[in-house]
Length: 312
Ligand SMILES: [Zn+2]
Image (cartoon, rainbow, N blue to C red; front, side, top):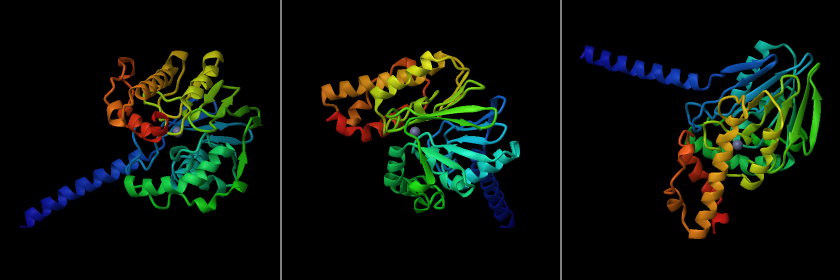
């Protein structure tokens, strides 16, 4: 009997131990530094779940001689606090600026942690409107259906007074380092903001670009999104840090997003023409060139649910 009890205890401990490990591993920050003063955390290419607590998007850091700019706040206050601690380990400069590229939870829900350290927070006015309007319901769904920590964000602590709305563009000086922040308007969302560091020629483009993952399009204007990507084809740059996936170092690597958007446009117009329902659209063949993209079916399903009005 003692032995059986011991075995059960032993198995339970192992399961518990590995559960603990997987929990913490997926909420680790993995910083990469492609150029001097440029860092990013590479999110995992996975759906948000209890283990990763939504830490799935890439987050950026630009360090100047006088201050630091952070690109996106991550999915919760506690993870943003963890991120801030890590930034403080690599530099003692103050975190003066935070750019929220768009309102989606994996990019914006950590905002409170930056408010508490008096960081200037830039966001599109329209995106902030939707963040406040739909954020609480989205957060509640994440808590109930995906096991997110209930303390993740308190929306009443964030008001328009905390945000510096960015509609056009602005150049910030981080000390011997000029950075452009620009609201490109409707694309992946209603107001996507991009960041460009002149010194290292690095773009942080939020979810305008996904690599090796199907781009989410629940709140997108697909036609405008395709047009807005042209600047990346024309400009000369060294690095593009996408919202999800590996850093991009050549123009050919931008193709995952543009090919996926073309597929979505074709799919939606075919569905309209045929009068097909979502279940039928999900049966459409996905071109081979998109085979390597992760989360295709779930992204398609989620996006089509929200785009049902344009299908009718
Ligand atoms: Zn997004």
